[in-house]
Image (tube, rainbow, N blue to C red; front, side):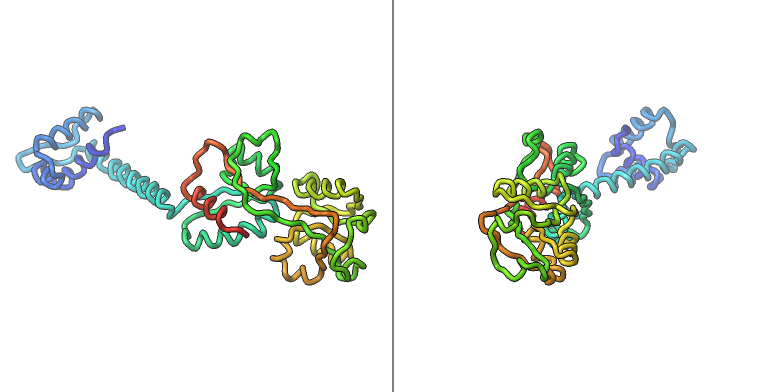
Length: 299
């Protein structure tokens, strides 16, 4: 590619109409500027100026080169400004994914706070199950993910993992359910009860199923839903039970008024949420800063 210095020298000369004033504006000697112009003409294989005692004038080829050179330099300056803006975190894009809980209750406040400081940053947020988010981060379709631990064993070595928050799963009952009048029940009381569950085979569903199995409890999953708000509404309207995120109930104040949360003795279901990124791959500047912010801002 022709050196931009040669093009700038050429445009300065064309605008000045003479080599001497152009050299003065460029802070170079007249012979040095003449050599630059000769080098450019040699590279392009054309004569750019008609020289006379009164100065220089553009040839037809010179007028074409001048138009294109201005465009090239303008685009280069735009490129430099864009790179500087990205480096200074003024603009950029964060590609992040997470499950329904993360997208609904963890990320919104963190993103809003971040964009107040970096209003030019665009967030592309994907809601999907933890296993799908892990694959997307591994394949670099996403830079960051918020997932339920443990990581898929086949992908463990692909990520750098930063613990985020421990989320407790609580039992909720509709206001009219017999359990709703109690503050605490034993795990055995759940045996045979109908359950509104998360979609299978999601990470959170596997966690709940495993905890119930370990406690010797068999519940009847009568429907499967993806999001906490949908599960809470279904519990309230059908009179069933469900295990949902304590974190999610805290945000769903309207629907939470229609259900009752209670403790279950002999049963503890906790899940650990973590931020993942592709190992040995640098993040974009804005993604790196957001990851740091998210890791230190507990939901």
